[in-house]
Length: 164
Image (tube, rainbow, N blue to C red; front, side, top):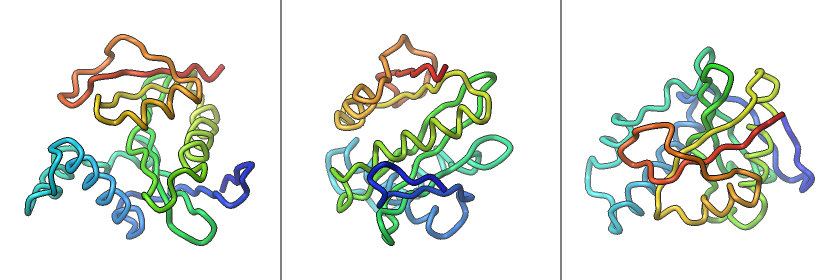
């Protein structure tokens, strides 16, 4: 468990199938679908997106998933996928009612700590044009835009942060 400077944020590693993790991953994907299409999600659309982009590899030996609590409240998540020498950040999500309270920073600090401990020398991620808040969060925390390293159909911006 990691406690941040704003001591009300804590993180812990969980398996993606754990009920709280599955709930947050569904909320994350619902927001991604809604923002991408700029309309409410259609029946079955979130399930299709979860199937298209599964999170089952966010567990050892392939990666990890962190849940964040703000006080006693389940408040967010972030995942890492292990790559040779580096880690890929994914599924960064803070519930709307907890945004603006340092959750994004707490999650980034926790995943960076875990990535360093696992021997990663950098973290990379991709994101979309419409996720302007996420891009601003990454830039504020030392992630720099880099050339494309992946071909995900939704990726429009790529970031990296060196951990050494």
